[in-house]
Image 1 (cartoon, one colour):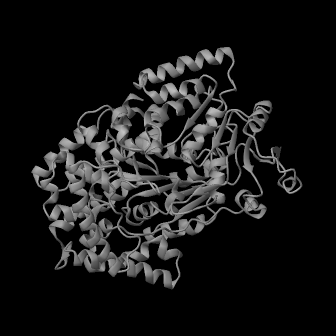
Image 2: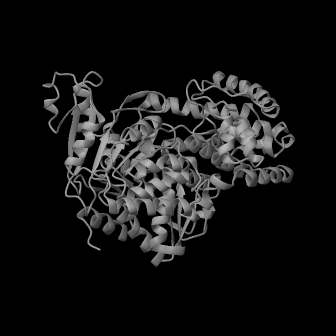
Image 3: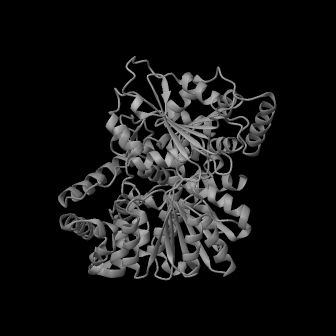
Length: 625
């Protein structure tokens, strides 16, 4: 294989035994470096772990690597465990972090960890997991970090080098293999010159068909059209029903492929598949997290066949999933960032725009933004598109389970590990002081609530240390005997409530008697926890359980068809599947606890069996693919 300059540079460092962080544009060929590490580890009969930020990307990498490396590849996520002792083990970063803290002895055979999309360390909700994995990673392991542009990559590498006491090499590539051209639709005109936007004053609204005609006339397909709302993705796709982007030969091929995929994945009678058919037959599709996972997979395969000419999708399509196109379109340049909606980060714009221009196919790629200067100031537009990408910043916020694991190992010296964090490395004195106060406060809560006594974890503490994110609610109920009083339906409802996050203004549907009783007990307990956290000024506070999926889950456990249980909820079907899978993951953590009594484990095992079937069974889905 002929490598580019940056690939050769990274591979040379790897062959010399150095950890390496690679920063290169989307589509530049970073995966080839990961494949070199995997091949070298297989040849040497040592292990390598490949982590990814989302399960969809983990699943795709499993399939991709399995085609090249066969039985050497395994996968371990909260949903899936296939060939879990393989030399090459793909996993989510949460699973890796948990293993580092809970079972470090199980990692002796692995020499490398590949962190794909390593800039995810500054994700507000989950970045702390990446930081903890890097902080506590065993000293015998090397790191290969792969990322889109990180302006402070040298600082990031220096941090990793400082805590592991060995050099980390930085490899930079700023040049895209396929040049990217930026364009704009404004006042229903299209230009590649941002200075033209202030000259146009006729204030015509942007029309979708004007942009679509432009793409069709200028060889702009296939195109990925990014939107920041699921409903919007579907609406825009159906707006194009008057178009037909396929010739007769392509129509025959698309009909055959679509029918084959639906049959292979058991979706022939799925309403969503029938709803999508008229779009697919015209070369159009949509893709978002509210869809059934199997339907998302069908649309991904349809798009890679090049028979889908335009797909309307939310941003997860840009996160590492290998779906390149000739053009990318931005419906707007604002998105929801966890707690607020604001203009896109420069780094996020280029992550998504980077999907334009297929290496080895296109000589150039195109990214178009649909804008109105009434809705975005010109200076903000220039910043998003032409500004310097934002530096990676720590989002360190240790969970109670992590504090318990660290206390189990370091006792009262656990605060001494904070200087290992990226947060410490990047922060000023005041920020460091507050981070230490917050960790100490969490330890005081754990002591005050009986998780730690006389310098050791109590039985409740041992139970809680393996349940990341939901430890206080479930552990309190465990100690009070409430979990053992519940049957398999009740414990499933409780775990689903713990993981569910309602949308703003989403109403709680009427609940069955079983759910109401559990909710009453949980609400009283949550009040106690919240009071304790407020006393110690802990933020963010423990999330409150929400019972919006209770009756829906109860019907599923009672073996109703998936299409029938949706009448109990207004949650999108893909989200229902995701939350059921998260429920199974929490149940598995309880089942694997060394402290939980056998009677509880048996109920949990039965609950997992009843929930993890049909469309919820991610492992079966992956094997079908």
